Length: 227
Length: 367
Image (tube, rainbow over all chains, first blue to last red; front, side):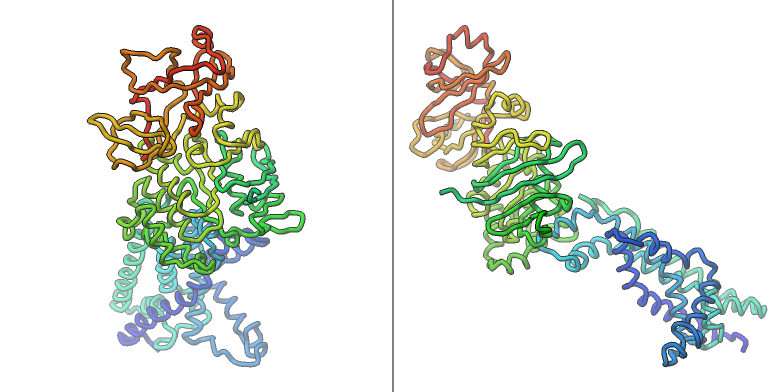
């Protein structure tokens, strides 16, 4: 099915929605993993940290293929194994999962740095006031790293918006169903529909610029953030 | 019978040596004195439970905080301490009020009425006008008071103060020391004070421990410990001075006259003019080498203070001698440092009657 102006708008709308869902999916586990890596020493920490960075260095298509194998009928999360059909492949759910996996490393890395920038002595101080681990995280560490976490969220969102390689493999490029901004640009360019490609390009530029600008202003050092 | 506040036996590895100490704290306010790097802060942090590598035994009251042999090492959040670190560590995302309230849960769990306790602390530390301020723009002295207040509001069983005056300039020290004394007198909480400032320790503590390279070299009543010949040179280098509590008697145009010690004490001292009402109490100090001695009552002399006293003790410090003299029975002895030549010239010996000559301008006032 060729990409029409209608489906182009639909692709932009859906991309924003899916990138949002993917960010929501990734933020909590990403933040917890980042906290774990920033504040605790444990066996296998380096292995975990490496595994979490893999989607950043692997070809996105490789990650997509791995996800495809995972959710295939005979895969570890497939119908034959679980006994129920999650109905992931070639649906919007596959888009969200692919985006989430691809943006996780960026979220974890950015959040980890923002946690590491919080002086651990504040947490130590909180311990002497009777705060347990969860209380410390919620009342001290999270509020002191909100800017970094916001930056992590924006980066995760933009990474999800731009995701292409893994998405086309697990979700395809079905206009009106699983087509995203990036796969719509690909289709428009392939079919020689220049006005459409230009329109989508402007949107991509706008979103990208805004996101990077916000992240930059968030990561500017705060005055007297440390004692 | 003396109360036992805490009992400990510690071994904590440090970079150049181990902290290895054994001590029973039987006074409510104990001071830890020593050079930087002698292990004072390590001791404090071990009491707080922040040094997880510590081995040994700590019992506070009836509770065992640390017993390596029994694999007991209570985490800091269970020890119920009020910690005031040197860098204050006020939570930067909270207001002063938010900081004071940060130990609320623990205070409530300990059966304290948080609201009245907060009011009390705000009152004693004069924090009322600061409550809604952020902590980033507080001055050093204000930060110190808020940090003290936060610790007190958490309903602590023990206050741990790490160099409470070290980060402040001289002027602020004179302002903050009285707050520390008020905290000591107003709240019935045992305190452990780490400091390298002899004035602060004398003004606050009932017992002093001197640490050197991780070992205890002396313990006892602060003035006695600080004037030991082996310790005095170091105490002197850290700014040892004679200190007295005093009460304002009357003001004149340029000076103020105070009564030393108890209200009925016969000894008055002329100090630089202060702006407090008559009857209010303050602390004054004068360095041991700022006091002159005369064997006869001098006349035509500019020094305002000429106080009769009797020499008690002379100790040699190489070229100098450390003299202790008694003004009256109710006051701690005065420590004077003189050259050995001066002592020979004046033929001074224990029992000699002398006059202590103290210039008004050599007196520091803490109020």
